[in-house]
Length: 144
Image 1 (tube, one colour):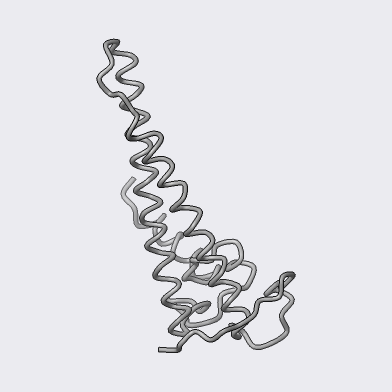
Image 2 (cartoon, rainbow, N blue to C red):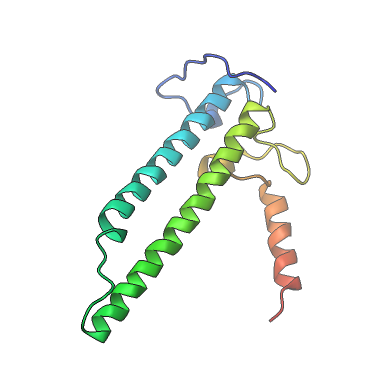
């Protein structure tokens, strides 16, 4: 496992304009920072929701319509938190891939994932072509 080195990220750095090797130390640091920032934002939102919304939600309302609405809102918040929990887990897994020098390569083909795709979805583990193939297979094999 590679140990993270101290890499200074230029403030205007754009990995798409980097003419160096694919997933060089600066590029990896760019994506590491993006993932850590994303995780931090998700955790902040989660804490805010828990302290403001879920703890203060009064589910025992006298009016049935109000109670149903509150329960629906509560369930929606819980589903959102669960999706975010899963996303944080994917972010953590992706950060481990960066540390192990496996980040940026398609899990299926081993080919590099385009920088544009990684900028749009830093947790991407499949190249665009492999993802499209995967989605076509899902579509043809699901029960309708």
